[in-house]
Image (cartoon, rainbow, N blue to C red; front, side):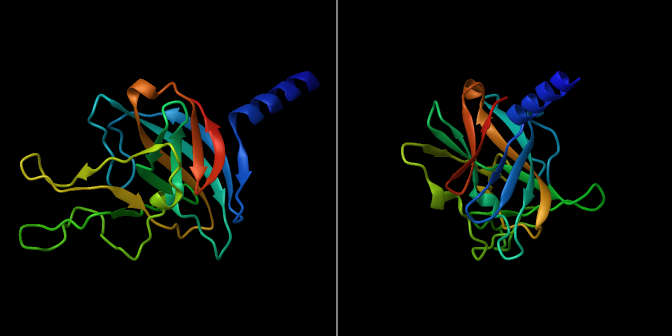
Length: 202
């Protein structure tokens, strides 16, 4: 029985990891999986329509301090073989099973309708909400970020999305990335700011 328990503990340590960042945020990886490209995730229901891309989800438990909440745009996923750095494509956060999840997308580019007003069915454009993605570029890596069309094929309204600072102190985060299908079996590393959080395998 003790041997079985020891094996289970070893498997657990391989599958999941917990990291404490230098600014006091604890991130524990709970689950990593490939998900349906057209499944509903978050307020924008990120739908990947290209056959060249595959959506994946990294479920994490995050504990932070009251004066240093997690900046979602500081997460990135590195493909270490092909030297690609992916931006977070979608996010859903929650503290329990009851209640509406936290969905905090922002536009990088202001999108206006024909009358010059912000699009009603798009996330807000708010330059005061800082985007941290470019602050932590990795030398030798190409940033890959996907603009989303909030218009039509004839009249496209495109912007890259980023995600703001969470209002939660302790929460579960579902982090979604859209990866190149040809590289799905590569070696990946999840980063928060400039710190490696975990090796990621699908």
